[in-house]
Image 1 (tube, rainbow, N blue to C red):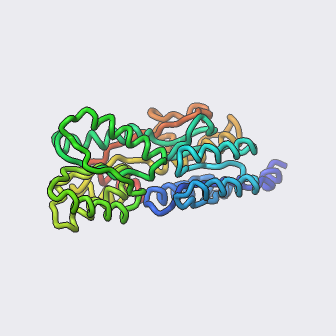
Image 2 (image 1 turned 180 degrees about the vertical axis):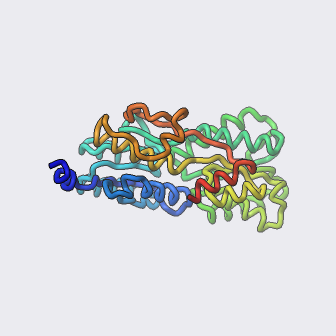
Image 3 (image 1 turned 120 degrees about the vertical axis):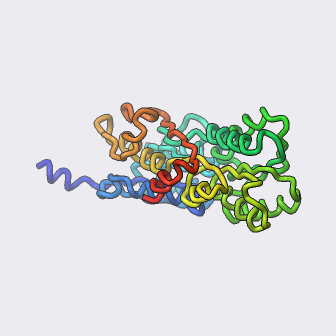
Length: 317
């Protein structure tokens, strides 16, 4: 009898609305979501919706998921404020929404699994201050304006920079998480401020790698203009090994698979046991508890040459 009941169980349909798939980190996040044991064994059917960096498109995708009666939504919003309205629509329709990677305004999510981006902003600014000796001129390449990661990393950047009176920010502008856009931006700044830029804060690794490319293409010694990033994508870890930049590891597996486990706990109830290995890995710093917490904070780890190979293995697995 139990076998026939089990055979009739349909896969749970869960939508993942992500802000965009152009950058490497979000590609990693999506791949990790698809690698969750519940997706692998067919008990969960995942559909990934590419928001293409557009809040209206993400809102329309929520309408689609509501109309099609998805069981749950995992949400990585492009816009802190606009994302909240989309969440409220889904919750009103009885669909739980688990946030991951970036946040929405207000306490509207069912739960959230992600890193604290203010901490990331502090960590990268501290790394740059150490590299330039706490004085000089710097530029800041920001994330998409209005996204929580941009807002919170900028807050962390500014908290640290405010302590250094001998540091001047020559320019700050968005690179929209894009390597190509950030390379162009950095080339323009190197032309506008010849010989005056002593360091670069980039709010993600694709932007940092774009800045590194621009510095090298100008024939400058990358070691004379330190660059810091955030994410821990493979190309950035290789750059850390070459001494071209520093970064902090944001765990795509923990964010994506953690969010799916929390979604499944919401749907299946207190008896659900998480299936991703990340809960064992972070048992001390991010305990599962009963799976019903409002927020789960994934720890950051600074990537340095000494641990770079271990992290490279982790992101390439």
